[in-house]
Amino acid sequence: MRIGCPKEIKPQEFRVGLTPHAAREAVSHGHEVIVEAGAGAGSGFPDADYLAAGARLVPTAEELFAAADLIVKVKEPQAVERRRLRAGQVLFTYLHLAPDPEQTRDLLESGVTAIAYETVTDGRGGLPLLAPMSEVAGKLAPQVGAWTLQKANGGRGVLLGGVPGVGPAKVAVIGGGVVGTHAARIAAGMGADVTVLDRSLPRLRALDEAFGGLFRTSYASAGNTAEQVAEADMVIGAVLIPGAAAPKLVSRAQLSSMKPGAAIVDVAIDQGGCFETSRPTTHQDPVYEVDGVMHYCVANMPGAVARTSTLALGNATMPFLLALADKGWKRACEDDPHLLAGLNTHAGHLTYYAVGRALEIDVLSPQLALKM
Ligand SMILES: NC(=O)c1ccc[n+]([C@@H]2O[C@H](COP(=O)([O-])OP(=O)(O)OC[C@H]3O[C@@H](n4cnc5c(N)ncnc54)[C@H](O)[C@@H]3O)[C@@H](O)[C@H]2O)c1
Image (cartoon, rainbow, N blue to C red; front, top):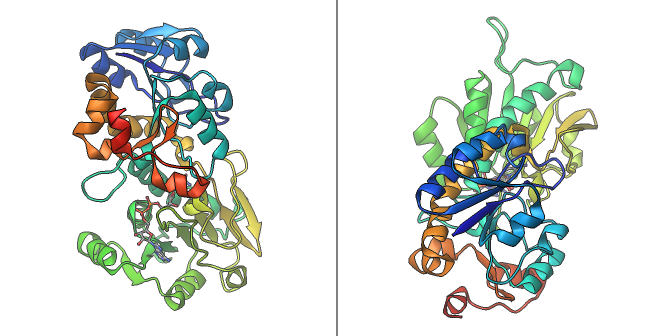
């Protein structure tokens, strides 16, 4: 199969869909790999690394899209890229179609077979191609929060770990899933006094068993959440209700109960955020102040550490990519229902029910798409 990896063109996107190591594996499986010149530069992979892995470079995206049977990317295809897709071609990338009717329409019109990273599942009820980015964002959250707490950045001038004779900062993490667990581990590792709040008792039990002693857990009742938020130097928002907007757990009125210069890091901002006062920000201008509380609300946090994120995403996507290339998408999806869960469009049909419901488009069952 001819696997193509274009350069990402969405603004501020520095990740790349295929690492040189993944390219080497695909080549060793007998596939032809083509990479757009400069595609890996933002993640620190020069063209020479791809050439050394056995890939071929092409100078333009047009050429790449025209030649590839299977396209592997990071972000959803932009309008100019969507015009280059065609029936019979497989697209493997993040899509997030539910809030994006224009992209959905273009993908359906193109006839492309699109498999979305974010809906591929695993045997434990997880989303294995989303988890690496949640791990990155979670580990990054205390790091950017610590920076936000510095005086020059508008924060209260508190050092997370304290020093001998001066106590540590208090950190409240709301939501103890993938983001929350990684955030809590790092914040505790930096010496902060950390409490994780969640509404799921099984989740709190699992955290207590794994990390008891490193950080505290607390049931996320409205009362407990309000108390922790009022006492915290830093609050990290990490809740998720799958398929829904993030619940607003901290109101504007509650900000006045917070310490002046406290930091909010709302990781859940990509789902609307869990603070009433959150609005998306960018890496260029990440922090703003409301009622004396500093808000960090960058919607694509993993982009700040593009190299780590590319490597982490590549580790997770590689087995699926190889299956798609080795077997063709139909047999790969027949053999693996978790990969089939990623199928969002095929030959002009929408094949993912949640997107169909959100956009009021008829859905063809993915099992029927396999028989087409
Ligand atoms: N900003 C970014 O760059 C970025 C990157 C990765 C993930 N995210 C976002 O971070 C959020 C968390 O992702 P995740 O992978 O950790 O999800 P997850 O499903 O692993 O964890 C979410 C947790 O929130 C808990 N929860 C739900 N409702 C709650 C409530 N009312 N109070 C307290 N806890 C509640 C759940 O029980 C669960 O444990 C998502 O919105 C995700 O999209 C953002």
